[in-house]
Length: 324
Image 1 (cartoon, rainbow, N blue to C red):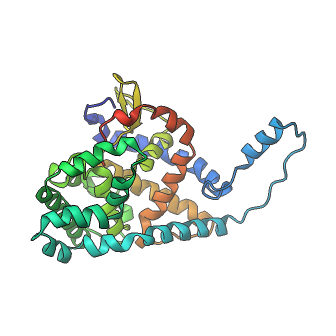
Image 2: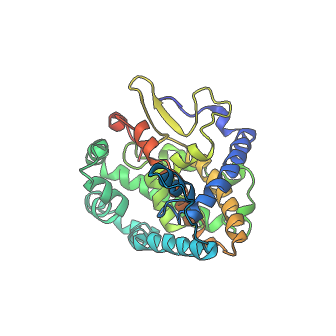
Image 3: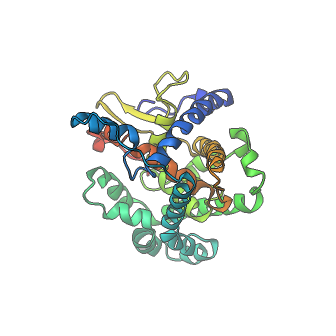
């Protein structure tokens, strides 16, 4: 996709979505084996060990250790859940309907104290002065109207609670088979966006921290991962992969920071179903109350597996306008 164009209409067609999903599922099986072999990216896989041995003149075949895949997967899942829970409490304490009812009487404090200092994803983004590409976010946040930020945040939390209470079926959720049946498109509406401040990434973090069984995190790593899991193919798109944002004038490429949450969430659900199947083959059950934590951890691994190439593609991308 070329900046500043919208995503192509073909991407919303279920036939297209199914083709992309088929490719993603095939890739997941390959990456999943690497996920086990490298223990989530913490170790070097056997192929890399062999290449290193050959590089340094070793003629012998490196001895491979038998890995207990069940223990590895259980540990990775446990670590992912623990990391998720570490910073969950502020979201639950602040982003609930009762607390927001109180904050509406002082929107200036909500922006400059609560969002700025108490919501981890916003606090960390504002404080990360080393990343110059985040300067635009800091400017946008400082210039944003407190009332607008409060309104958008409230809209997001109200809608996610409504959907959780009225639409979520723990047993039937995984059976949803079309993007229109999942129907998360409303979250891409302007009523749920503060452009330059609360975009797809941050709004998805809000609801992911509240309801990880229902809402996936549309992080930067996650969108990059979809690019690689879909084998970098365009699937009929005229503007290259839908998961990329290409600025031909500046010669830069980024993950598609405008990627619609309604589409992303459906792909994430299908990825969960595939991961559930693969985990089960190794005797591990994925807890539905933490459904999308397993997905987030795996997508992060896929993205990190290509970090060198991603860094190359992102060169000079600090000039981009980011959607957070």
